[in-house]
Image (cartoon, rainbow, N blue to C red; front, side, top):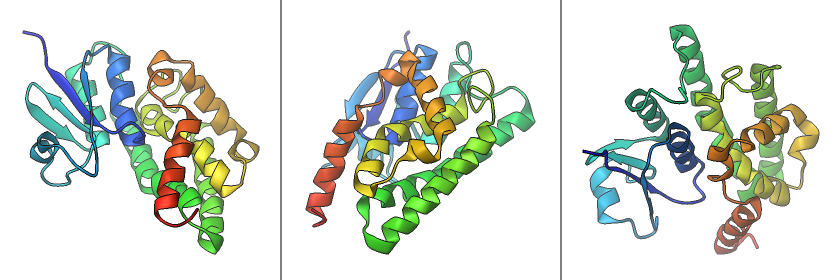
Length: 219
């Protein structure tokens, strides 16, 4: 009997993009179900009753929640192709550390570059560049964060890239000018079909951000 794999997601979510990229890398067939986050489906509320958030991976009727947990689950359940986490325990621990750093730093700071004004926005832009520079140091001269192989940290981070147009448009700054090595890494990732087919166009993300700004009275 074939596995039933369903992903509850929302198209601009960089967290949902993680699951989509990983499943594609592994060659796993899945059913994508778009969620209306203002009117959450009964299935989402049933499968993630604690946080009531996307993404949720439903594998043979059993839910897995939280994007980094989903990545680890995908890697363990479908280990044969495109391993995400390294086999070495120390390297695996380091990958988890950096993915946690991304979750704690990149999302909130990036969001503030387009959703705030004045001093708060300026501080967010400065901090965001500092965060990317830290990630550039960790990347070093490697093609990917995992070394020669596209892996866990790359999957955890690449979804943010399609939001950079919005960060730059509303934050009025150039990420590439400050962090060229980071942008080079992102463009390398985009050469992978799993990434290029998953990440939405940056202009579409900008339009989405603009709608949010209008609703919040910023435009």
